[in-house]
Length: 379
Ligand code: ADP
Ligand code: MG
Image 1 (cartoon, rainbow, N blue to C red):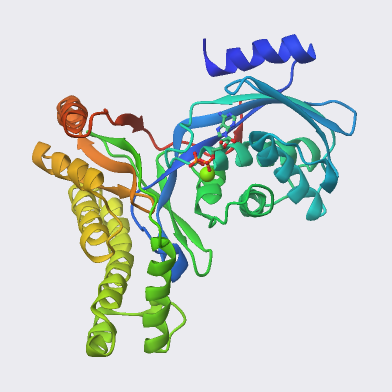
Image 2 (cartoon, rainbow, N blue to C red; image 1 turned 90 degrees about the vertical axis):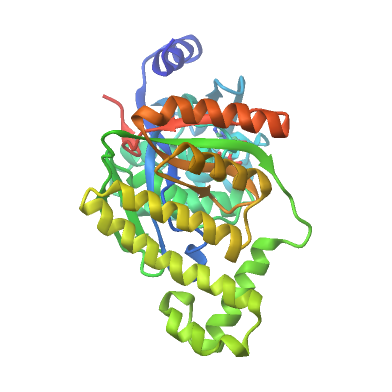
C-alpha cells in the first residue's frame, strides 16, 4: 500500500475523520563537507524520500500522534512541562514549543505519520520529521505567516533544545526549502542561498551506505574544528572562509603539518563548491563528478575523516567508471554519494554490494535518490 493510503487508513481508524496531508523530505549534500563551521558553503537538495503526516486540529489543547513506522502513539499538552518521553514524539513536541516560543499559534491536533527516509543513515530523517510538522503548523494555525527559513530554524532549535543534538542548519534548510530539480548553495556565514539546476539526464544519484560507524575516543570532530580555528586565528581572520592557499602557504612553517592539511582541505573545498555551481549551470556533470572525487580524496588524505570501508567504496566506484563519488557527511562511516551514468548503474550497484560484502561480511545498503520538493501540502 502507498504511504498515503496507509496513513489515511490508520487516521480513519483512530480519529474517524479526514485530515490534511503534509510531507517533507530527507536530503543529500552534493558537495561542501566540514565547511559549515568554517563559514563556507554547503550544497544540499531535498530527495524523493519523505516523512508524510495526515493532520487535523482537534479543538482541544492536546496533541495526539501515531507513529506508523514505530507502531507507537503519544499524547501531550503544549506547555514546556508536557514533554513526551518517546524520543520520536519529542521532535514533534519540540516543533510545537519552538513555534509557540516565537509567538506563533499552536493548538491541539491529531496526526498519523510515516515515512521512507531511512533512519540514521545520514539522510536526515529527523529534519524531515521536524519540517513536516513545522510546515503543517504554519499552514494550519498561522496562515503561513512564519517565513520558510524560520521553519528550518524551528527544526534546528528543536534538535538543540528537545533532542540533545547540536546540529547546524543545513538539514532543516534543505528539507524545508528544497525544490525538484534544484540544489541549493547555502552560505553558512551570511545564510544567503541560491538555487542551481540539477537535472542530471543520463545519470543517477545513488547513496551507498557502508552501515558502519566508527566511534573514536578523542572526538575527531572537535579536533578538526580546533585545527581550523587555530589556523584562522594565526591568519588573523574569523574563519577559513576568508583564507586562500597563498595565505596558508605563507604561514606553512609556523603551523603544524596537521593543521596545514586540515586548513588546505577547507580552503580547497570552498573552491570546489563554487566550481560545481559553475559546472551545473553549464550542464557539465563530468566536472561535477571530478570535484566529488577530489572532495573524497581531500576528506580521506588531508582532513583524515574517512575510513577503510568508505575508501573501499570510493575505489570500487572509480574502478567501475562511476562519474563522481565521495563520502557524504562528517565521515568515519555512513554513506558515499555517487553520480553514476545510467548504463553503469546496475553494474556498479552489484559490484559494490558483492565486493563490499565479500570483504566486510555484510552488504552495504543502496538508496537511489532523485532531487525533489521539500516541505509541502499534499494535493
Ligand atoms: P537521521 O540522520 O536520519 O536524521 P537521527 O538520529 O537524527 O537520524 O534521527 C532519527 C530519529 O528521528 C529516530 O530515532 C526517530 O526518533 C525520528 N524519526 C525519523 N524517522 C521517523 C519515522 N519514520 N517514524 C518515527 N520517528 C522517526
Ligand atoms: Mg538527524
